[in-house]
Length: 270
Ligand SMILES: Nc1ncnc2c1ncn2[C@@H]1O[C@H](COP(=O)(O)OP(=O)(O)O)[C@@H](O)[C@H]1O
Ligand SMILES: [Mg+2]
Image (cartoon, rainbow, N blue to C red; front, side, top):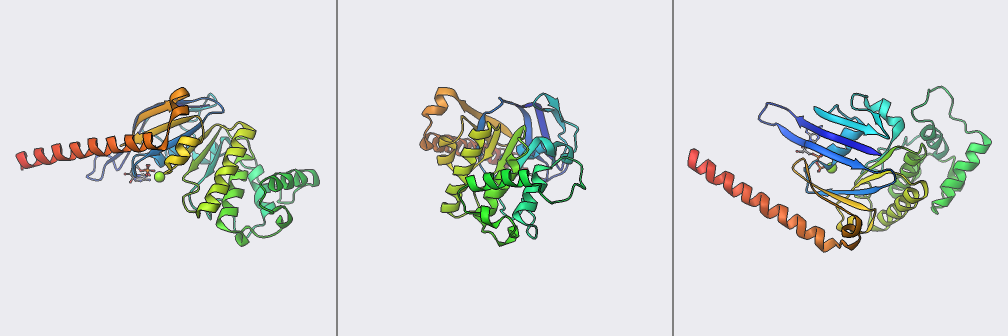
């Protein structure tokens, strides 16, 4: 379960570059819920996920994960409660280490170091099964460096690794955006499988209206640091990509109106 209460974050406060990236966000995500996060560029989607992960401390508000108040916890301390996959397939794994070593590291995340990278027989067999279940024929390549895999394969493994510790929340930030359509479909299929198998509480940022209306059980739309739509239940079940596009069009018009109002004010007062 994820709970945000009155969370705000301003970058470069009190300067001409001030950005109010999160404005008084209240959000509760039930355990096991899969939420798609959409919104225009710069609306605060990544900042929302980064605030939960602890990439920075928020200015105001509280953040709880499975009831634990992590608001003041640094990022590394939150890591044992959080799984993350980013857009860049090269960011989640260590390229010169083998698949097996990467998996071993991932399954120990948040625990003391110094246990060595060798996988015991039983654990290795278990991880091999998990890799085999992805259907990518990687189980025979456990001792190959991750750097030899394609972007899609790496992203699939990063996803598998981020779920190994059964995180309180899995944060996916446009994790298929850098892949070609075939690999993107593959990673989406795995995302669905892992999330439903382990009942992971998940937040997935996506630009795809198709993904947002087909995956998960809730959609939140952000605009200028706020959550402006929160769609769940029957409304979410009936949701079509066109409905989401229409809401984007509404935002665009509203922002244009704001722009022209601002312009009129500028004309008057300059
Ligand atoms: N670390 C940061 N430092 C300064 N500004 C940032 C930082 N992260 C995000 N921003 C700004 O906050 C706003 C929201 O960004 P972001 O959350 O990345 O948007 P989105 O993911 O919805 O495209 C943008 O104006 C962006 O430039
Ligand atoms: Mg982003």
